[in-house]
Image (cartoon, rainbow, N blue to C red; front, top):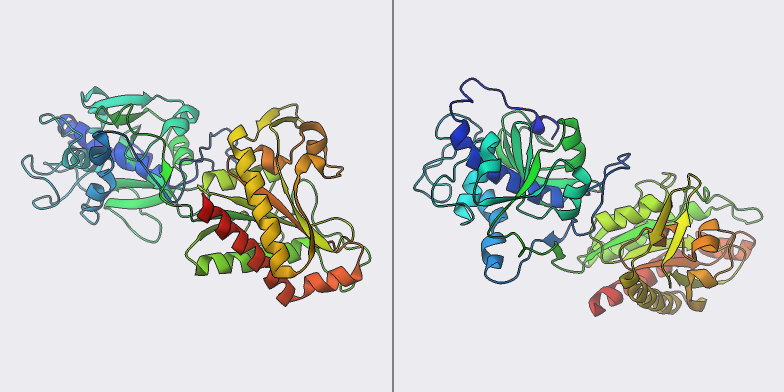
Amino acid sequence: MKTIFKSVKRKGFAVIIASAVVAFLIIIVFIGSAAIIADHKGAGDTGEIITDENAPGFIATSSGAASGVCSNVLTNAQAYFGLPYSQDPPHCGPDKTYGRPGVSHLDCSGFTSRVYHDSGLASATGWCRATANIPSASFLTKVAGSDINEAAKIIQIGDLILTNGHVVMYAGPGSKPNTDLIYSSSGLHAGPGGSNLGPHAGTYNIWTEVKKSGGLLGVYRSTSCSGTVAKVTPTNNKTVTIDPGHPSEVGPGTHNDTTKPKITEVQVVYDIALKTKAILESKGYKVIMTKSSVNQKVTNQRRAEIANESGSSAFVRIHLNNGGYTGSFVEYPDRTGTYEDKNGKSKTGPPANVLAPSKKLSEILAKTIKSSTGLKSKGAMSEASVSTDNESIKQAGVLVGSLYTEVPTGTIEVIGIHDSATNAKWAADAANQQKVATGIANGIIEFLSSK
């Protein structure tokens, strides 16, 4: 993606710049859709805005007559995948045709212009645009300037992202955390898994790559869609984020003072998470994990952001409770709180519309876990009501992971292993872990089915 945004400097480029503008517009649309697929905050890019609308399983929707016109750009773009990249005339393809027949090659602006043309979004004349001329297109509206944070808030599938000498189309959230899907035509970039010299789909963190390219020149949208295309909305409720607890800023999850066998919370909950993931995926659900190995350290804030960015309909966190309680309960946020971290930076959350669904999710999970394990249960409990030494709860009344989440969440606390050898033995048993996983999966499925 890095080279995609580099300026394309080829001999004769100035000659075709007028015709490339339209093409450039189309590429921007592609980048828009591609970027939606990826998460909008890459690892370490703490200044970027993340929007939960831009995530896997989401498509652009709109109201009124615009819905059919503005929602077909991705399908029209895919018709050109595999064509070679070239700036040779005609860089947008034949004027009088629609679709791939007769089109032998496309450059970046030619590709985006062509897709806008085929989708009925470009003007009847002057639709073929060079990259540099996209801002002057009468059929486009500039919806964001050089501020990446602002662009990330409003980006929609089909939007065109313009950088120095390049344009791509935003296609949606990526298949992996912190990635975006973009549609683009490039002679400079070899896409993941091989060379893609021409129209293709690629998965990247779009905003990180824009920064590397020297910055954003603007985000453009069809005037036919402006004000009518809503935020990206889920096509289904089958994406969920599973968060096996620890290690985090709270602790490593390795405390096991007196237990025999010597097991750790971080290992047990990771094993349960993997079993839960397997059950859900076998039933057609998409599962996002907040970490990829047992001892990978992820902050609680970042865990919540992964759930937001992935487009999940539920954020389920798995822990073993402190002490030796032989049972389970599920915590949920029941209020919006403000927490100030050690650097003096404050955060208010979660949004009010997350509270009731979080309680519902937690009540269902408490029920299904009790049913599958046979363990006693305290049911669903508000985070503020649980006795704790956690500073975020003391100050804000909610866990950090809940404070930053924008989707329904529940924190499962299963059997306590720290002070009970009997409980530790129960938790170490793979068959019992499977029972917990079954209860979690059943609860998630029931919750998502009820939405």
